[in-house]
Image (cartoon, rainbow over all chains, first blue to last red; front, side, top):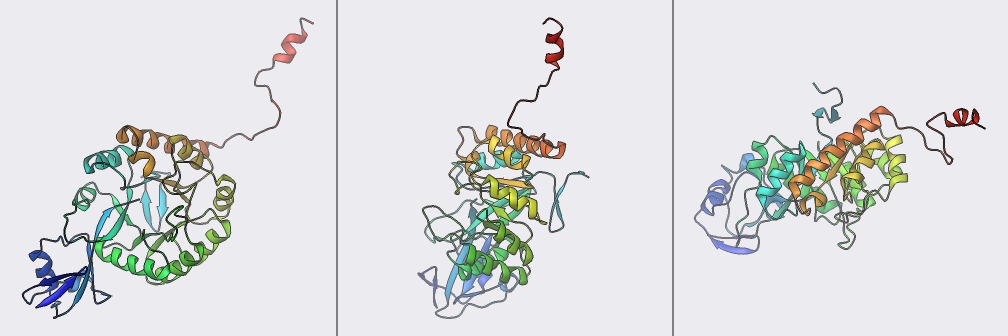
Length: 65
Length: 260
């Protein structure tokens, strides 16, 4: 199925958020995620199933002052 | 237990030097600098992941060194964006501590007082420990305190400018009136600036650029640690008052009169 992650289109197998992040080798710690503009709490990631055409916004902590 | 601990929202800090993690050339230098500074609270930012590139893992070594993390909302141009950034930061770092910063103008990066107050009010209600970056405006500082901010972070000069404490008179009013900690943030470019802020009675300072861009960031971090400590001790010791005219330190006059 097709989803977009930070405006990049991706073809993925049906999966949970957590599984998807593991598949793309993206760290869990220090990350935050919104789907279609709604922030999804990290505790929901293992069970939250991604849907066709979901638009993911993925954020990560970086150095800053 | 340190008798002079700084308490912010029930958390005790031994070091009154807070630090940022930005602008370092290498992560190793950043970590060594933070350690040399003795800092217990470090700021971090959040960004949208670029799917093409890989980011360094900045988090693990900071957690390992038992640093308390203070995510900021840098990049937010209004209250709505800052609230969204705050909620993301809370998820990313699993902390409700937040450095609220809203600076829509990229040239001077001056904090927007109206949007900051609006965002702070909402975030406090949502359970965030809000430390707002603000101009050295005593009226705003009072309002931010009244709505429940855990501390205020007035600027000494624009972010990254290294120009020092250009807002001294207004910082003094903020410090005099505040019932919450005052952390002087932004513009501090030299250890002497940090010492001045502490001598004035600031509860802490936050330094990033001045350490990160120094020729030797680790040595500079040590220098800042000493300056903050010296400034704090001087404040506690009670500075003498200033005078327009000289006041002799030695009883010279009486001695000379005997030979007249």
